Image (cartoon, rainbow, N blue to C red; front, side, top):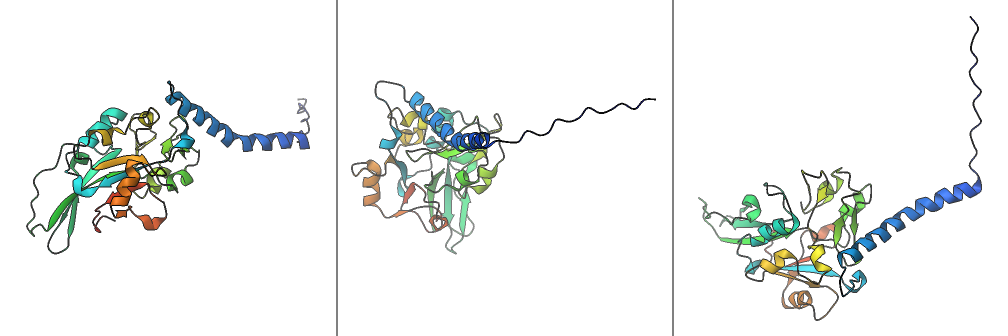
Length: 264
């Protein structure tokens, strides 16, 4: 039987200097292209009579713990406004109740994120004080979730809001694990990361986040960080301000007034 000869392989094409330069340029241009596309998305969000320029804003939120009554309206409004799954354990914002006993023990609960209020408090050890603390993504200026995302799906906008690009997210959960505030979850419908966005679709139209708008006691304050006339700046001037886990150097932009040391 005559042995069949294998066809000779063509020599590998050597990459020329010009082609190598072209490939390098493409790899460097990809992040810039992604940023330009996201800038276009922001412009599309803000389509209207007054164009939205993210460079003119830098947002943050203030929370007055003494004003929060644990009604949960903010949680319900957030779910409605942002189409968050109604099942438990999926929250962009939630409210925790802290119960401090005379012995110094701190008990924390948040039934259904506080969306339906809280049951009466009972403790065999007695109760020294109770208070409510709203929680959400802290929109860090140095966000660890952005650092660990392998595909660039989590990013920080020019106006200081941390967002997730659902088209790029692969659901790897790295950001969920990296967030020190427990503010992220994987949407069971899309299998992608979800979190508070400060209701960004409302911000670009000049509206407040839904949770701020529905709060009956004004416990949440929203505004510009770098404008002296901003309600948020006035809030930070009037109160002694703390941030959550500030020692981690995440530089959070959610500022708490009257925050008990048990929470920090």
